[in-house]
Image (cartoon, rainbow, N blue to C red; front, top):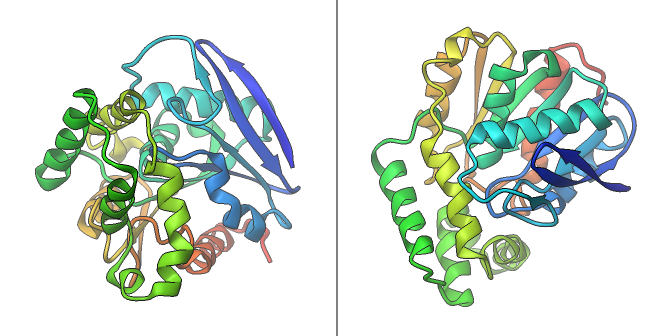
Amino acid sequence: MVEGVITVRDAEVHYIQEGSGPDIVWIPAGDQTCDVYRDQFAAFSSDFRCTCLDPRGAGETVVKVPPPWPIEAFAADVAELIRQVCDPPVIVAGLSLGALITQELAISYPDLVRIAIPMGTIARKTGFAREWEEAEIAMARDGIRMPEDFSVIHYAILSYPSEVMGDDALWEKVRPYVASAYGDRDPAMLAAQWQACLDYDSLERLPGCMVPMHVISFDQDLQTPPARGRAVAEAAGNGHFHLLEGMAHFSIFGHRPEVVSDCIRGIIRGHGQSAN
């Protein structure tokens, strides 16, 4: 495992890298750091070189300017990471905040992206998605910190399907993922990341994006329901839609990571990229 820091125009970006072969860049969701993709590194690093970063506002990445940071700024960080430590064009896969960054990379840096795989994604926040995120941001900006035990439960319900809540062993398995992201979070940084998500709108630009964009949605996802992901795939100039049953927003972490990995391997094979 290689661990390092790259310098971009206004930040010092922390990353990890492991494996050899074609490059896959994994982009975390909001409130998450690069170690969250440990299952994916284990599954893919024998065939691919896996790279992940701490997005600005989380982990060990240090940003020299205060928020707001639009999604375009997050994408510029990843673009520079790809240029410095990968061999582009690369495969990019990201969840939630990471999915929006994946979209933006494919739109604005098509020369760097071989295949874009946004998971749990959306093109424009409207309706429930907008009202929920606005409420979360307002609470964070008011400096309100939910008690850690309540925070874990609150976000678990929004992140995992009922199967997890009804299975004590599964709950114990996934609980650390929720706790590490949301248990004790700086409200200002949470608000900064989520404001970027709220403000991002790719809908008008997606038709001109010809990078293969394989949207993965989860049929029990409350944060970004499948209809939102399907709209991204349908709007993209070269879009494809994949629906995974019995899964929710964070099912890639601790619940059914192997199902998501199998889907991603199938997507990669479909584009003639080597993978066992």
